[in-house]
Image 1 (cartoon, rainbow, N blue to C red):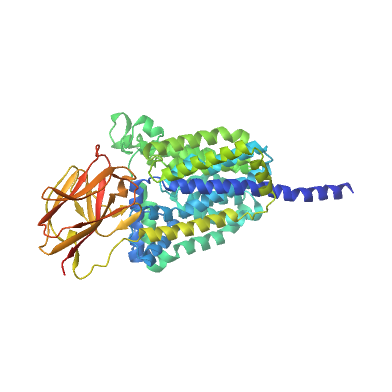
Image 2 (cartoon, rainbow, N blue to C red):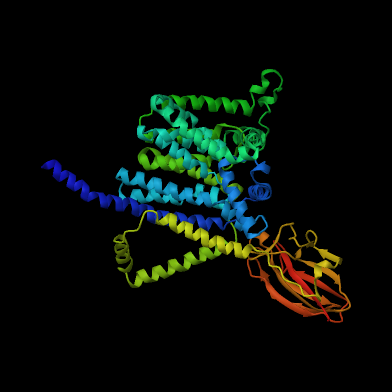
Length: 593
């Protein structure tokens, strides 16, 4: 009878436990989603965005057969999907917000998945509500993950979810058959996931009697990933670029990574240069960052392998994974500023499993990683201001409501708690938001072109007779820095990229009648700049604008040029000329009929 009562009690508490677990994920999953979308509006790291442009172009033009990027194949599949989006919508591939946004879709879902995983572990750990929410906030709003992914524009979080799955499965006999497959997928997503080998390998060896059963699934997964490259005849070159050549691409002891080698030999020092001025001949080459770093990492890896052979719990597994990723960043040469980010997801899972032992190290690793990334490419960009402004206004409105009606939000929270929302809701919401945003980006990314009438021509078809410009030179159909003309998110095929202060002289045909145009500050300055435009002829001002600032929509204008032999397109810097990259757009010259 007592056992029956206990079973009934357990049954009655299941819905409550389910609700708590689901509620944690729904709340922090939604906040994670908002944080990722907000940070995506920040300025990306230009160098890496150039790689995405190059690789998407190659996949769009030649498919897997022509792809020669140095990225592992699993993420290349997504780049291929991105290339098809550009091909189907007939949008030129360029370094725009749309490219960054679409390339980051896997990161959005993986970060949401990480919040999901941690919420399940937190619910099982019976943490106090305050501590449970603090852990969830740490994962959902983790500054290192946000700076590395949506701000920077990188996808380092993507392979980690496969690594987490591999470490989870290898700890349970009934899930062991999937472990090798997930580990292989992690390495196929990013070669750096080899850092998990000492941890995964130790447990895999310890469970060798059943772990080998995962090899068939692993082989099938590898073949499926390789299949497009096999069919296209590009497998060998892809493997060479992604796993061999990439190891020597950055022959530096450290590449902006704040680790042992930044401390001892400095940034961008050659990794093969021996210490103490020794010669590289003989055994001197062994005393270089390249060899010393690898030897130190092997020593730590052997220690981790030994520990993993005797690891009996999931929390110990993720503790060792965090240590291995930390050692990978601190000891090995050739590390980038972002590579400590590989330790953060494993530290987050470890914290959910063993908060008392892990919280300090999770916070330290996150702080070090976020600071390192912030130094190189921090959170900035004019597109962030609308989000911040909306948040400030909403917070003020909520504060007024709370002041006038103190019981409103507690009552609202109680009502929401009674609503059963499916656990998949954040994933569905993210999918809908991404689809809607993609539609808007496709609409805004189509170059604004016009159909010219028989008596019309572009002014840019005429030669520039003379110009003065304080920075660079006028560029036809490109910005002053050589990028695609873009103002307020809209791109333009025709125009002149210039920099205030400037003056550009054109000779007009005798039958010229009117000139229509648009003006604006180019998006390449990320919301900076303030410029005044005017058109003059023989010292007479035909048209002038108010001050036009960055992130402002293009302004339309039209002037009568009948009887004018020439016109000057002038820009005034409005004081300081910093960031005054400005464009004359769609300059349409209409002739008399």
